[in-house]
Length: 189
Image (tube, rainbow, N blue to C red; front, side, top):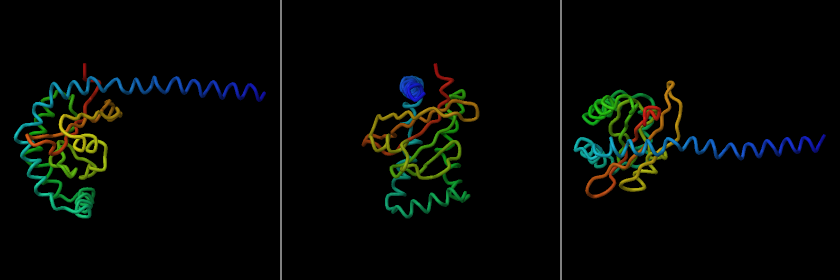
């Protein structure tokens, strides 16, 4: 009896070990098409003056903030401070991003742009928090430098398979911020 239990346990471990890489490969299948979509359809407009100017202005505005100031802003965002939310959601950059999202035919499900401190500058849809610098989407793009694309795992959202794809926003002097795109991977070819 003990030998049968050990054999069954060993078989279960082996099947998990074999299944885990297959699952990882399945998850990673979205990375190439999502990266290609960004390179073909998004990178060109990341250098648009509307984006670059808004990020540079935000960088200047937030240059002297201490972490406690950032935490206060983030708490105000989470508490749904209307003036703060409107300053991000109803600005020229957000209008530009909404037009780009609408023109994507449903491939882009959301967009938000962050400055060099990880604070949202503009967005198409609401985010749960204002400060993104504590998350991979900012750390693996802005902190990594120009030309960086980070594709996160796929998550089910409203019946869609969405991957967040984050990209460094740069100007002639280098990285100035980052942008994150929700990409409906089922619409990629």
